Every structure is written in C-alpha cells, then in structure tokens.
Length: 285
Image 1 (cartoon, one colour):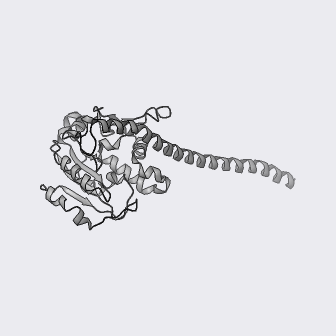
Image 2: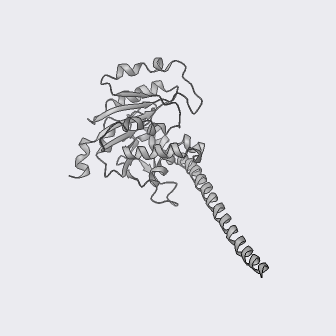
Image 3: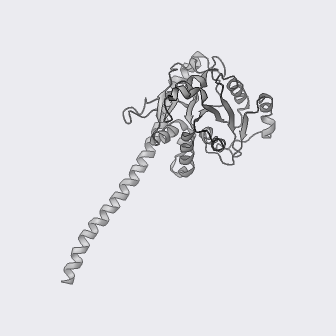
C-alpha cells in the first residue's frame, strides 16, 4: 500500500499560537478551523505563553479573555497550552510537542497555521492529499530570494498553513531549545526562513502546494483578506523574504567568520611550531 493510500488514516493535530490583543481574530480562525472537512482531526492546540516575548500582557485574566473557547469546544478537542517561556512565532510549532509526544501513532501530521487567518474548509484535506512521504512538507513556498544561492532551498509562506510530520516538529523543537543563543532576534520574530532553514538542514523537502492562488486558501473578504488585499499581501511577500534572507545571510556569515577564525588560529599554531621546533633543536646542537 502506498503512502498516498494511507493518507485517509492520518491523524492530524492543528497547532497555532497567539498574543494579547488577538482574541477576536483567533476566535474567527478557530470557528473556521472547526469547519475543516478532514475527518481525523484529533486536537486543536492553542499555545499562549504566560510571558510574552514582545512584552505584551493580557488586559484581563486569560480565562475571561478566552471564555468563548469553552462554548466552541463542543467535541472537547481544544487544548490551551500555557508554557512559561515564549520563543516567538515558532511557538505555533513547538507548542504542540508535549501533546504529540503522548501519541503513539507514528503517522501523525500537524497543520500549523496563523491566528489571524480564516482558511477554507478543505484546506487541510487538500494538503493531506498532497503528502508524498514523511520527508516532504506540504506548504506554499518560494525560493525567490535564495534561488541564486541555494536553488533547492524553499522558504515556507507560513501564513497559508503548513502540514508537517510530527518528527519534523520534534526537529524544530530540538534546534530552537538547544541553539537559542545562535538565533538572531530578527529571525526569532520572523520564523518562516528560520523554520525553513532548520527543516532544510534536517533533510526535509517542501512539496509545493498546488494551490497557487491565495483565494484558494482563505475565506474571501474576512479579516481584510479580500482578493485585492490578498494580492497586496502577496506582493509584499518579496520584501518580507528579503528582510529575513538578509538576517539569514548574516547568521551564515557570522558562522563562517567563526570557522575562519578557528582555521587561522590552527594555522598560526602550526607555523609557530614549525619555526620554533627547528630552532630548539639547533640550539641543543
């Protein structure tokens, strides 16, 4: 049986994060996610860190601000995750880890999305149908900026939703938690290239989402994402990717400088020894 034939049995977890001030947009997003037509959605994981990286705070108690969740959660599948630390937008990925670890099913995938978008009802099912293998991630992606440097590198356009195998989520979590000091702040706040880089280095590939038009992804006219607004958002994507690429390039250059410094130090030591040893032997004679 092929992987494609098994797609109908794949368990899906939906994972997203939010920040203070987005209660209303999150509510609209959750309402639309609850309408998804894919049958095997096991849980909706909403990660809301107790301490916000941006320094924002909730005006009211979290339970009061999100009391509408209980009314929506008729099937008891909504999980509110309250970690103590905030790693930024990538919390929509790593916030799912504690709940994925609890499941024993290997063929589990995660739909990671934004808290201020309204996705069409077939968004998840259309992505599940495009799964090729556990090493292929389904996402709208672009190599617009990096094509001259890494032709095979595609940065995901995360706001349109990404479908990842649970192992990829673990890879992201391990990198973020163990290499936090190596990640520039600008990359922490703009996670698409950061996540794409982690997955690329871990041997994952992006399966280009067949839906190339944004109106095939979102409910039109909601949250200001009508056809014209979507087109404008898409055009601005190049500038956004350029900013993130600059950050990514700086990160690579910094690492390169470190490697060069080490090699130069080793070279100096070798040259010094090469000069000092003959001199020492000559003095003994």
